Amino acid sequence: MEPIPEMGFMEAVKVSFEKYADFEGRARRTEFWYFRLFQIMVIFGLGFCCIPLALIDENLMILPVILIMLFAVATIIPSLASSVRRLHDTNNSGWLLLLDIFCANGLVMIVIGCIEGKMGPNQYGPDPKRSNTDFHNQNGFY
Image (tube, rainbow, N blue to C red; front, side, top):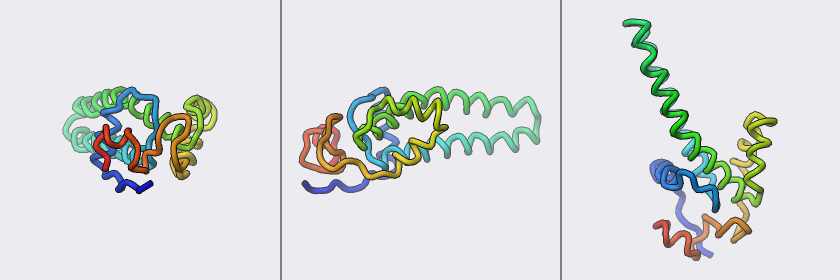
């Protein structure tokens, strides 16, 4: 099996949005972490917009706050989906995400996000890092 080149930032974000509510299959570490980085960058960017608007008028500060809330709502499903696919890559059930959300406060996904995925296919699908699978040919990963 030949390794596939790493995903870039834009490609990882694009794949996460293309698989908006796809809770099946597997996700590479780069796809998982770059999507989280994208979310943080957008939220911090909108948050920094609050500062000059607050200096002009306190009532203008509500616009970035509303945009942050809309962005958070719009990205919660792809965020959960990429987390479940990341769990699948490490050969864990997606239900482990519930434990993380309600008990571990994100610690499980931080650890799982750093662990190398299982080499070769597993019960959740083909290895996203190897090129001799139909999955990669369908999605343009060469």
